[in-house]
Length: 122
Image (cartoon, rainbow, N blue to C red; front, side, top):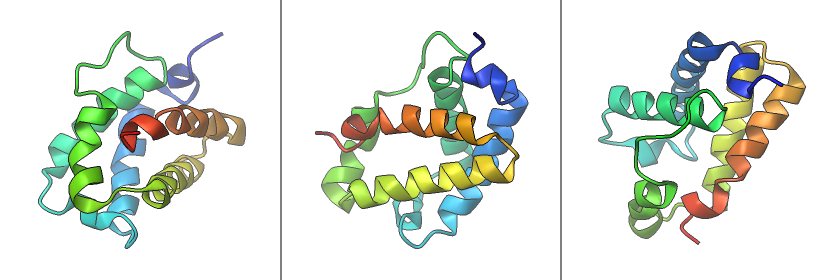
């Protein structure tokens, strides 16, 4: 069976999804404050690499662990389940807008959900 990465359209699809995803995130009053002062081009590049890995398109992810990457957000900005849910919601809406099938959106959401405890540093 092919990877989710391949089934959603590979690198061009992930790149389009991340760009649209961050448009949605930066417009979302629930979570946009987490990105104030962040180099969004760099952030998007990290996210593209992570999703490529998480969706089965690369054997490893060269960036920080989820805990390392989010510890400051938990400690200093109060990142919670509510915020994590908003991110998942924006990811789903992004994939839907790009025409990804519902079963694949569900698979992407399950992959994202599997990172919840690490992202929230618990």
